[in-house]
Length: 79
Image 1 (cartoon, rainbow, N blue to C red):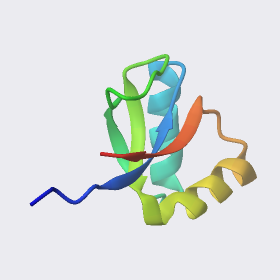
Image 2 (image 1 turned 30 degrees about the vertical axis):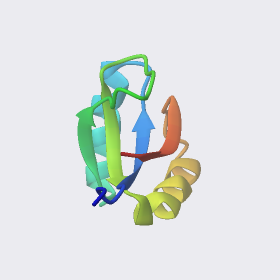
Image 3 (image 1 turned 180 degrees about the vertical axis):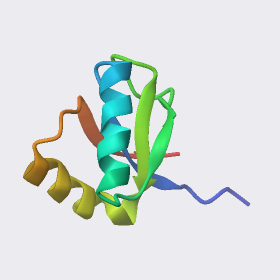
């Protein structure tokens, strides 16, 4: 029997400083997720990414736009 595929919403950053700054802003705003190593199927400028449940994608995208938060790419990944 095959494994169930897991989806997650991932945000990447150009620099480690950008990732760390994002983490501070996200935690202060109560955004879901955490910093993780960049998944192998993603190309990013630094080795860190923010990952959250795919169910939180719209909430995070709205926050990114409203707060004009800097990031490299935001995408849904299937593991």
